[in-house]
Image 1 (cartoon, rainbow, N blue to C red):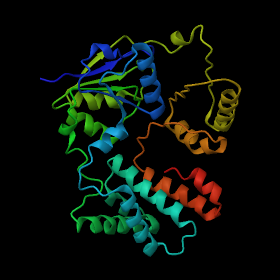
Image 2 (image 1 turned 90 degrees about the vertical axis):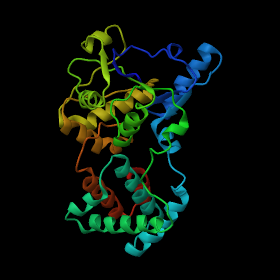
Image 3 (image 1 turned 30 degrees about the horizontal axis):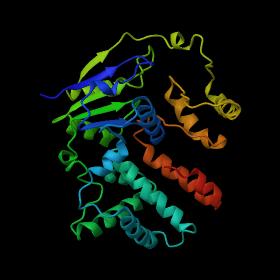
Length: 320
């Protein structure tokens, strides 16, 4: 019988890795930066690394790819050739191809059916479905798979304990990996965000309950109780002040050493506006993305930039 626990804890709670047997221990963090910091701190405190595998979900995701998946460089080359047939007049073709390649990967990771592209009235978006059909067909004829079967080789990783730490939100395939791994391995999900009126993690808690996870939580506290005596300023503003908010954040970052910064929103529309205007101040952040119609919106934003034919703008602003 495996252990499946969600640890909903206070902001200052930490996972003690010494509480877990190190053989077969996989420790998953949200970003490369947080991973490096955690690994360096562990080595500094202990003097050695033991057998703990510090990873991001993307790294774990890649390790579960079956041998029938084509090399990414090869698949990108094939996609470029197909795109050239459909969009022969595209001026910045390499950048265009790279963003379509990333776009296809993104909607796969989010678990969105490619056929949903056909539901849009925009002819360009519909043509992308024709591209992906031809793209997948090319590899199917070679008995190779695209965007499929990423979970078949999990048992080969020999995971005894999986610890997932510090995630506010999870992608579709991350949840699928957690679900599959939890069938044969102990899984602990540490969520140090137990705050009153902080509802971003509620949907995840419901998902984990359905997977059979036990929810272990401390009493929720007010955010203000963590801020007393600390040099932290809360910026509150209406939607139309978003650019000003980002300008203030940027100024603060430039004037002092800030390692971590979070923006807590209680309004979805405000989050969407922040996401749209972050480029204006050359800042980026992770956003809780449960946006069902993001395909059309994001691809249209991308092509608005393409219309301007400004290479610098395209490179800087085309993260789908």
